[in-house]
Length: 121
Image (tube, rainbow, N blue to C red; front, side):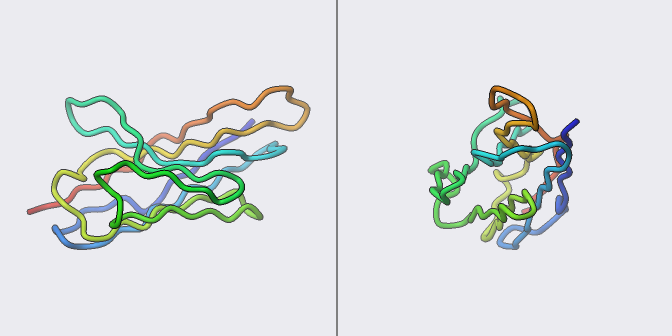
């Protein structure tokens, strides 16, 4: 009914940049919070950044000043610009959208399948 398609994952050297994008498609009534999470090998999934429908943003301390989240409400897209990448940023990055589907009563968190970002030293 709703799908999230992520793109942009790649292998990059330390200090480099990567831009991730996620497009939500399907029977969407409204997208509320959109965000990115990541999971490094052997670690739990953690929040990277979120953005509300009013463009309020929240970042993990570890990425503040290096990552920028943005969204385009017209096409239900959320992006993550990642600069000054470090090897510890290596992880699978997951898109999350809290949305309500057409005819639905409640907002649900919907997840993408993940895209791998590898930062080499």
